[in-house]
Image (cartoon, rainbow, N blue to C red; front, side, top):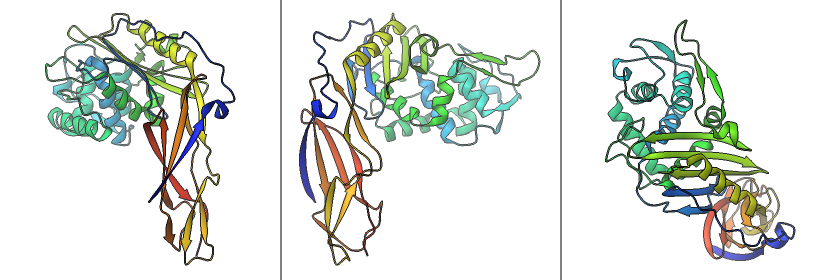
Amino acid sequence: MRRIFLLLFLFALAGFLTPVYGSEPPSVSAQHAIVIDVNSGMVLYEKNAEEKAYPASITKIMTALLAIESGNLDRKVKVTQSAIGVEGSSIYLESGEVLSLRDLVYGLMLRSGNDAAVATAAEIGGTTENFVKMMNQRAREIGAKNTNFKNPSGLHHKDHYTTAKDMALISREAMKNEEFKTIVKAKSWVTDRGIGKFNNFYNKNKVVYQYDGGTGIKIGYTKAAGRTLVASSERNGMELICVVMNAPDWFDDAYKLMDYVYDNYELATVATAERQINSVRILGGDKGFSYVGLKKDVLIPVKKGKCNASILYDLPSSTKASVSRWQKAGKLEVFTDHTYLFSQPLYYLEDIE
């Protein structure tokens, strides 16, 4: 494989950005905090982000993700006795009640229903214990290696813990799912559980009401965890996830941190989709080389007037014919200040017999 570096000065890429001077991150009450860019995964702010913390009900982000990934949210779920009378927030389920999995997910994300979380766990995992194993396995797959779940709701347990960084990773994975994004952005949801039942779910997360561009995600609180919040937003094409944990001024903290990023960063295009950006020699083909490119634009947030990036093309020096359009050829790696960020696949842009 050949590895070719190309240095990109983002002043040119971003159109001679205007520098912002004296823009320091704000002081926040949160003991643990992080802000990441959803598209690239770049960390744009962090404070004790890899220290152990208790998540409280932001745990339900993983519960909802697993429910959505299980498919068919409109299937009917019969509520078991295990979900009845669970401590804390509730949507007041009754034993034997039948409702859709979609209603349960809206109930656990908008109203933070602990009973909805247990009912969801029983439906997806068969038992709460098995579902918790699924939660921890999915966390490992996402890369949240400092997380250990003990229940689907976030009720306090000394061995139920995570980090702000891990919750950002889990939330970023969840926000890739359009169904999840729709649910956490909703201000309300109406069920059809029958007369006298709790049918109207209003979102407890003030981010979707108060913050300009707010799109979700979840609040949490226990005495041991303090106030926890995962907030998401989008402005000018940039999507952010902000996690604050043990944060007395949880919403104010999140708003200040996201404002700081929007005020000091903007998106720059590092590479454009479907353009000929490099080539690979083709042996034994009806053409001696093939151009390679990307399926989608590569965008990263850059600090105004300050950052530069470099690109590394990781490609073979040659390959044997034949190759097909959109066959994977290698990868493009993105760095800022010599720090690796992420990679995107490179593809052949033509058919060569």
